[in-house]
Structures are given as structure tokens and as C-alpha cells.
Amino acid sequence: MPEVGIIMGSQSDWPTMREAAAILDDLNVSYETRIVSAHRTPDRLWSYGVEAVERGLKVIIAGAGGAAHLPGMMASKTRLPVIGVPVQTKALGGQDSLLSIVQMPRGFPVATMAIGGAANAGLMAAQILALGDPALADRLDQWRADLTASIPDAPSDE
Ligand SMILES: Nc1c(C(=O)O)ncn1[C@@H]1O[C@H](COP(=O)(O)O)[C@@H](O)[C@H]1O
Image 1 (cartoon, rainbow, N blue to C red):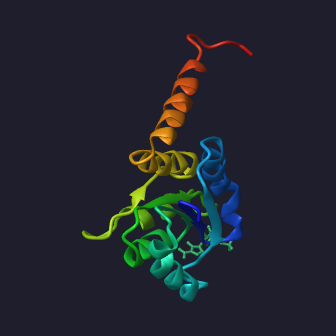
Image 2 (image 1 turned 90 degrees about the horizontal axis):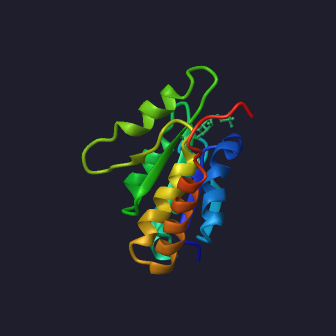
């Protein structure tokens, strides 16, 4: 059973959300990907949330754009940590998605990333899992060290 559920409101979110999947691939973290929409497939959202714990998922990454109710609704159906990714939108640049996700009422938090911040969502999920997985913690430390080492001291024209 995968440890991370990457869910998104629409197929159109996949170009954004695949960055979370790519990070989890890099770190050898198991995940599944599903299209789940609070608006278009509410019954699917309901059962995914109800079954998430017993299915063995540990963290859910939820991306949606516009009236982005998916992450918050998922947080209301499961006590698993939900990491929200506001997907960029044409009309309002993703501010709509961000504000829809971030302002959760007390009791049902969503850990909200930046607009389009799916890669960081993957990293945050891995960091949560690494609390109980020393081998993953080592892989994360290496990933972070590699990133740091790749940053040049000064800009170049290339
Ligand atoms: N925000 C939501 C939800 C939801 O929150 O449940 N379901 C779909 N959507 C969003 O609608 C946008 C446009 O979707 P389409 O491209 O399918 O028209 C997507 O960014 C999706 O996340």
C-alpha cells in the first residue's frame, strides 16, 4: 500500500501535481495518484477520505485550482495530514486557489504550500514520513545536501 496519496481536482492539475510525484520518485517514497473532486465526484472524495487511514496511507497531498475545496474537504474526512497545493489559474493567477485552501477553520488544518508548490508538497510529505523512517531521513539529508551543493557562488551569463 502506498504511503502518500496524491489527489487532484482534475486531469488539468496533473502538470502541476506531477512535480510532487517526481520528488517522491527521487526519494523512493511510494504513492498513488487519483483524480478526486469535491464538486464533480463528491462520493469519491467521501470514500477516499473515510478509507484513507485503514488503507494505510500516511499523508495526503491535495491539489486544486479556483474554488479549491478539495484539500479542506479531505481534511474534514480524515485525520491524516493533508498538504494543500493551490494550482495556478488563468483568471486569477492562483490567488483564488490559495485563499480557498489556506483559510481553514480551527480544528481542520491544511498545510498549504505556495501557488504551484507541488515539489515542496512532495518534500513536506517525505519529511513527515522521515520522522519514523531513518532510511528515508538519510535520503532526504542527501537530497538537501545535493541541492545546496548545486547552488553556484555567483551568477554566470550562461
Ligand atoms: N477546485 C476543484 C475541485 C475541488 O476543489 O473539488 N474540483 C475540481 N477543481 C478544479 O477545477 C479546475 C479546472 O478543472 P478543469 O480543467 O477540469 O475544468 C482544476 O484546477 C481543478 O482542480
